[in-house]
Image (cartoon, rainbow, N blue to C red):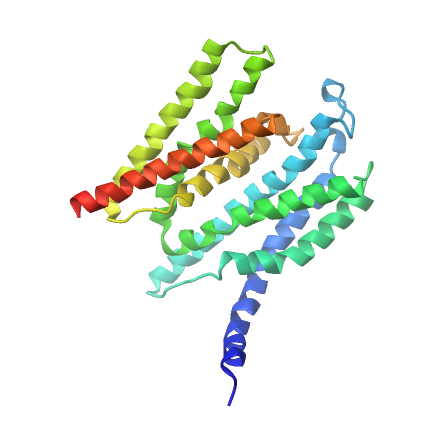
Length: 299
């Protein structure tokens, strides 16, 4: 008779094999994008060498290297979410239930190939090759972004309406994540306090009200509530994966597809960036708190 632990491991094996199958196209897409950007394409176009006088290892260009992982994760998000949505709808037509593997299993199965391939690509291909430390930073950003891109796959397969609700709620966090950082421009003398008030604080307040409205509508229609981090993750995916991807695909010339600078999405000052995340988390906490009160009052 098998020990209970052995039985559990035996039962997990099919899940890991299935996760490996799902991880294969995810890994190929991620590796393929990096191979194109760093080994095949013209670096002067992809990373805008010499733009505003920036060289291959100036701060502005290094920010573009780091942003490549976010743009790649945006591609993976659209691909993985779309495929799972399609398979889920196809299974529903046949009156079957489709359940993709846990996102973290797919992520873990993707890591060995992605880390090895990206390290080889960035430190050996094309010119100039990236220093080891910078390559490691880009890899960490890439695999961290990939962890944000995969969880939506199961929602798209099983509960696509939930994905839409969270997307709407997350949209209200975009001003807090992307525009609130304008406060650092006051000290730099690039904007007045009145301008920052209108742009940063005004848009953040409007976004917060939008997120709370969506949260209340969701609680009213679905008779349940989120956990505070659910809309926050949605807002982060929209702000740091999908918008950089949209910039790459829609806001650049067709013959010069370049990766945006990090300064367009992240604050230069770490404390300001932390402030953006804290304010977004507080908005999510307030929205989920309203959901909970709504449920208890009208259940």
